[in-house]
Length: 155
Image 1 (tube, rainbow, N blue to C red):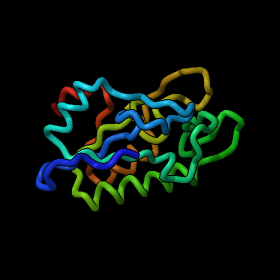
Image 2: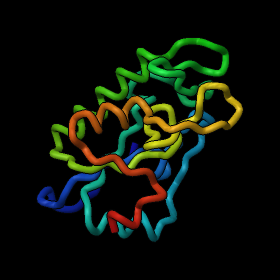
Image 3: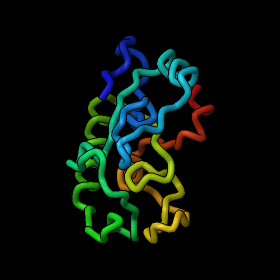
């Protein structure tokens, strides 16, 4: 994972999905890197704290895609991986709390980071209202969670 932003510790901390920073931690082994101009705008305003809750929970890269089914998370082969997703969510929250984060910018539709809309668990690309495990944990702790389509609210 990239190191946190090199800027002043007095700057506001922003928890951010590592894949949005270009880290190859996505289930497929790739990333979801934001355009460099957006990343630079974030770096000027925030101390960026990268996190991949799925990797933090002990899942490998690459890994089978997973989706939420109610309170559970299952991968494409039907294996219940909820415990690892919950563990990663707790790690993300611990980082956020330790660093005084009030806001997180997370990858939309992800079973861990999705904010307001996630895949329905059928592996058919159908979307339903909901939250990923880490996004849900952060929200319950009072941290504002935004998906990458709402980045303009931060810069």
